[in-house]
Amino acid sequence: SYELIQPPSVSVSPGQTASITCSGDKLGDTYACWYQQKPGQSPVLVIYQDSKRPSGIPERFSGSNSGNTATLTISGTQALDEADYYCQAWDSSTANYVFGTGTKVTVL
Amino acid sequence: EVQLVESGGGLVQPGRSLRLFCAASGFTFDDYAMHWVRQAPGKGLEWVSGISWNSGSIGYADSVKGRFTISRDNAKNSLHLQMNSLRAEDTAVYYCTKGTIFGVAEGFDPWGQGTLVTVSS
Image (cartoon, rainbow over the protein chains, first blue to last red):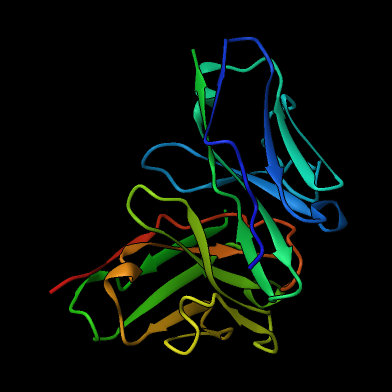
């Protein structure tokens, strides 16, 4: 089955840039999107179609997708960005949506 | 405002059945695919099932195929998940979420608050 692999954790200082990777076979050939989930809350879409931001998502969130890796970048990270982040893609071979393993972002 | 409200969760014994509901409002329901996503306690997100706007395309995760059935009632703006032969590993918060076109990862947005399903004797 198709897998999307993310680092378990990423630490970043306030104001710095956090980069979260999502690795999957030929991921760049399909769209990737990203979700933010804070403790006790439902996930929120922060990036869709690789690099687009939904209405209301701050400009400090950006995304890219090429080759086997999609990347979510948080510029000028703030304490309120501390959360779990998940990537997602569509696997046409199994006709399934797949979520990444998840990354916990800690703002130190 | 787009709203998705799940209901139907609860405690159920292994092997029994449960039916989840999702009431949608604030958007043209029959224009969009809909999905169920679950999250086991302390674990990540798992796509469970999805259905296209007209029920013409339906998909299931391998972990639930043959046991769960997704359906929708566009006249009542509602999404359902019939869960049969439940197992302990089905214990999770189940989220209802709005997609776009079934078969494209253009993002699930928004998500409901979730309903907890606990499978235990």
